[in-house]
Length: 341
Image (tube, rainbow, N blue to C red; front, top):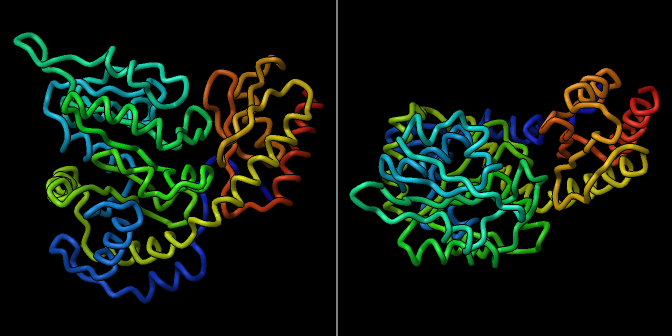
């Protein structure tokens, strides 16, 4: 049986989640009449310390709604060049909102105040100016890096000094909070909106949450409709999301399994494996002369599924459907792949 480490989105809903879906009290959410959705939005807003929240089908939709609400057409968005919003959302900033990305190379996952200042542009006769700063925590492409709230606050303060709103792509926000032992409300205290996923790590089958103040969410709800995200009896998928919020504390298990995987792979000659902050393990095969696509294919043949995230970088992601025995088995299978190569 394959050990699937492609992503923490591959988890299967628990029996309790399936039962919650079957028993959910539902209504038409576009009319605001779905009890399960309303309960989820209230609980999610409280979990991250915001006034209100909106349930959306995907994290990408939530990020793009946030950009659409915060920005005005033509404005520039400052963000890391490796950020999910820039790399993996099909140019949504430009396509959906007419916004221009202005990227920085945030080596530590989040831009510094100096980097923000160096890219900030005043509105003028010739330029629309900087309209939004987006941050990411944990940072997916940089290896699940967990950024402390002080670093988020520093650059957010710099943006606010320029009257620029700040959106946090916290798809794996709770992984950062657990890894750093920081309350979610502290992590989001200086941003204007936050997105987090229920289907990454927390085990829900569908959905993400966009949170902000009441006026922001009112506008976001309208944009969700614009983007085709209005849902009807959505309690069937929202009810498992409520249970997903209870899975936050167990994320530490995934982090421990990621550390176990990294330590085991580091013992294999030719693999370079940084210490993971959270549940994402990056494996560099450049020293073996094996590109990531080839390595991923050979690992899959051996029964371990991962994903290519660079020319020579493969990502393995731990989650609630794999345990320490699976991790040890994966290490042995990958060792065999390297030995046979």
